[in-house]
Image (cartoon, rainbow, N blue to C red; front, side, top):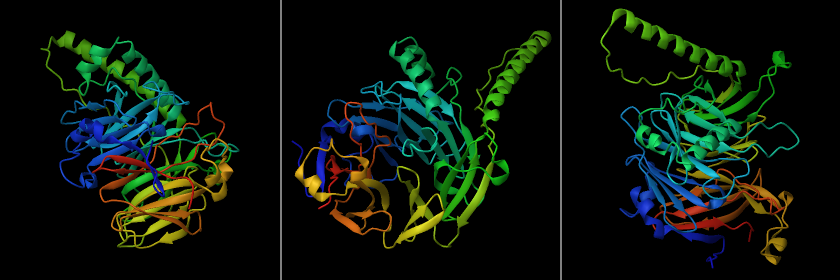
Amino acid sequence: MARRGHHLTEVALLASASGCLAAAGAGEREGWLDDPAVLLSLGPRARDLAVASAARSVLGIVPVAGGGGVTVKPALGPDDGRISAVEWVPLDAEGAQGEEGMALVAGTDAGWLLFYSLAGDLLHKQSIYPAKILKLNFSERKENAWEDAGSDELSVVFPGVIARCDGADLQIMLQKSFQEVKSRMWKDKFEQEDGEDTSSFEKIPLQIWNVSKFSSCVDAAIVGLMPPPLLELQSSQRHYCAITVGEDAVVSAYRLSEDRSRSLVGAILSRGVAATFSTISSLSKILWRSEPSPTKKSRPKPQAFAKTSPLTCLKDSPRKGERLTLSPSGTLAAITDSLGRILLLDTRALVAVRLWKGYRDASCLFVEMLRNKDKASSSSMHLDYTKSDYCLCLAIHAPRKGIIEVWQMRTGQRLLTIPCPKGSRILQPSTRFSSSAFSSYTPLEVYLFNGDSGQLSVLNRHIG
């Protein structure tokens, strides 16, 4: 039976899976989780915890329910870099149970993406852009059923650059790779070519944009679709809104135009040019009878940038933007800065709606809490709850104060203040699949992981 505190409920004690955690530095010193080189990502329904260490180049998958974990040591060459970001992505839209439901993607500081199954098999490897991957974020676009909110997506953030992979394209490729690995037809090939040859992998279609007009960003997010410019109302192209934070500009906004023709034509041209070059090279060797010389495999050329239109920015030196967190619908963004402030931004109107002060080194996550306390206390079952029973809140983890505060959106009061130990982080699953067996709404939850004790707890949904 899980222990239940006033505001936190213990989900698991991960000390039994210390093998995977120890590979990332757990237990070596108190407060090991304060190291920014240690990366964490919580899987859907909090079934698995991914932990990575950039310094050790190791990736661990820890089952929350218990059992042996999986430790992966990617075969990263000198040009592949080190792990700098991790994220979970679904293999299918429904998020099936077990290995067939999820994959883990790791980004490196040299711009490579590596996808792994829960068993630790390499599913895909691809170069995106030759720079450090700052953040990976898989987003569901199912909040606004009454309008076209776009499709699920994986966004990849670099300093001054952001890339987008469509969720459907990504899942098709991963499903195919997973079935090949599962059937063991390509097992030996993957083991030999892990970290060396990427020519056998199909490329994931993606769009990439330059978002460094105002400042080289340290964090960014694609918040959703936006209307086209006035002179392009009849255009069939999609336009996305991106929010970035950085040193020169605390927050900036851009319109990202999707170039559908470039991806198709570019793929055809790239294959045609490659085939032509290979033919010419072979003929020249035959004609000139040159001695074969070993050639070093060059890195794939990055894709050309699609069109970017700057919209607005906020410059307030010496204030610097640090982190960016989106609400489930993408209409709100919480932005932390170097002066200990937290800005709440309306991403549709691009205006600030709220400001908190005195929260240095803070991290934020949106969470949904039950509105009706009487209903929450009268029944422990949540199957009857609908989305209207919950209110959107912002959980602020202030490590210097040793507390977590929960504020109601947009201009509501502070609802909770929860003490938390040092060496802890707040986490949130990247996706939340609603099972067909239940008709109730799946709320957005926040988890607290204590690195020293290994305790994983969930913030209670009810208030009071």
